[in-house]
Image (tube, rainbow, N blue to C red; front, side, top):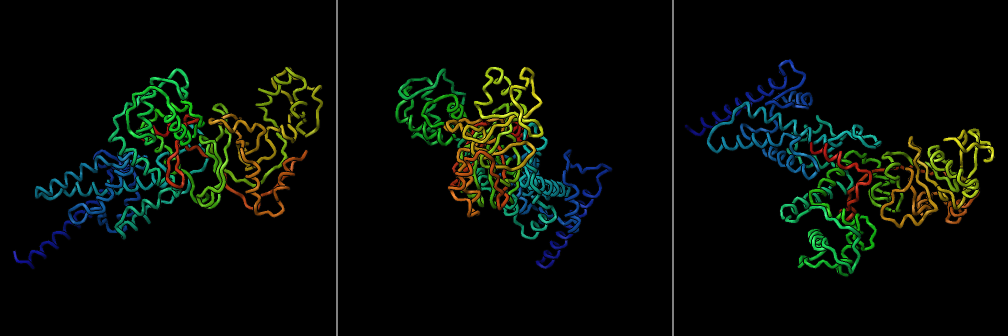
Length: 540
């Protein structure tokens, strides 16, 4: 065949092939056989309407197929689907196995000199489009709906950034998928760093030969003592690069291991006392697979959070870390230890707005605490109220003589209030962000409790270790609130209320993994046992 005739034949063949594929795509999308959804090869195309809208706008021209071959963009999408495992997502949620089968068949037919079936190309085209929408939606807002979980997550799900028509238009124009997906990631560094940590853990698993059976001991192990678990502890610390690989047969807990345990405890939010107790062993029992699961859960939680408020100024309380941070453009400008709710009085996850501070606060004792704690205490000691600087009030605010109250019942028709002072359960100041849970941040007279590594001891409110410093930070834009005035206001016999100039969003979150600004990973125990439900649903 002469060169000119060959090119004319090739042009008409490609034009005819393109037309045939477009017609088949149109037929596939417009004719669903009377069903409300589009099904191909026994699978549902979830995003039928969005896909129909996109292809209809371009006369049903293919996006992922060039002539009769898979395009570079198709291969890029397959790669991104496989890489979604580093987002803690399941590639099989995005037709990965089926896509692999299609790609292999098309590639083998090409090697054998056979043209691909038009039906196969039409179907893989639609599966790829459905897959990219699913992946983009999950990266944008998370795979799961937090409101449907059997646990507390009362932060409104963020508004969608993903817009299917705009996304496809950019994709068709620029022919580059990766930048569009990155743009959907949460903006907190912990997300991108978390992906890197998962990638590193996957690499470690490929070389992992350790037995990760749970280590147990009958008692806490102290330096100088011997225990059968010590060799395995050394192996695990070496695996995580805390120790150099060496001879780990010794069962003696020596000084070198002691210093290593201290560092390990610090990194895992444990009391750095060098004693190998149940909490330290629990942290040592986490295998790479366990940690991948923990990171996956928390990357999903980050996808639920609204980035726009966090990107300016915000207060974040992380329940499992027992910490409060003040963020300015994601940088931590203030940190304090906190005490959170007990397992049976859990601090809820929610978002609110801090608007004012109350110095020298009264404590209006919740009815549940009055019934469970105060009434029994008064029965045992009639001076309990006076000793704790408490008073009885009617619901209209009138003082009631405690001697006139019947303390023998399960409840009383009055309020109990603790007066301002150093022994007040709220301490010398409380920070208010009105919410439906009646939870706030406050000082406490029990300062010694902040020395503990596990600080779940409240009835749900958040006790702060650095109340003065926090108040000073919040009032720094109001010149009259000097250090002296703040201290004076914290020691009054009446409440002093101060409105903040700028209202500040408060996020009370539940994160058992995050990274610092340098990308160092931090893991925390699952205090309220909430991780497993999310992990099971992510992997389902």
